Image 1 (cartoon, rainbow, N blue to C red):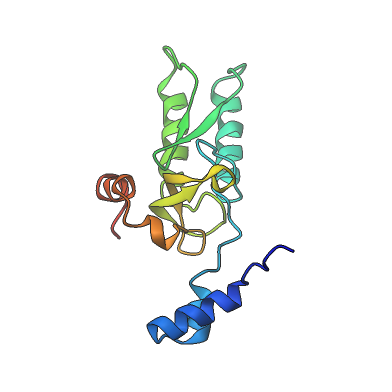
Image 2: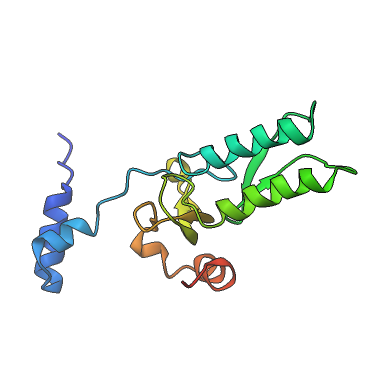
Length: 160
């Protein structure tokens, strides 16, 4: 018969006994957020209104524009289409959207900043730069000492 797996509560009690911490604090240390970050994805309740507004403005200043492809890159919202010789108004719409997204959490309608988060939980995960708030931020404690994570924090994370 297979051995029973320990529960989060049992592991928290073991950590409490080993480290002398309170049981509830030890239990909270293992709780994972409900937000799952996806690599390159610009989808999310925080950026969706910004993207919709930008696309409405693009319809006005650039009739017949190519289908927009928005993507997240190093925590920034980017337009992934060739603009060619488009007018100043078109470039202003895209710049305004990217500037607004830089201070908005991508996954919820809260103010955010660039942070190194953990994405790809389903296949093991890796550090990734996203714009998020404190609530949506998550990196497993054991991964915060990794070399790649530290390098991304030093080079991309906003310190504010």
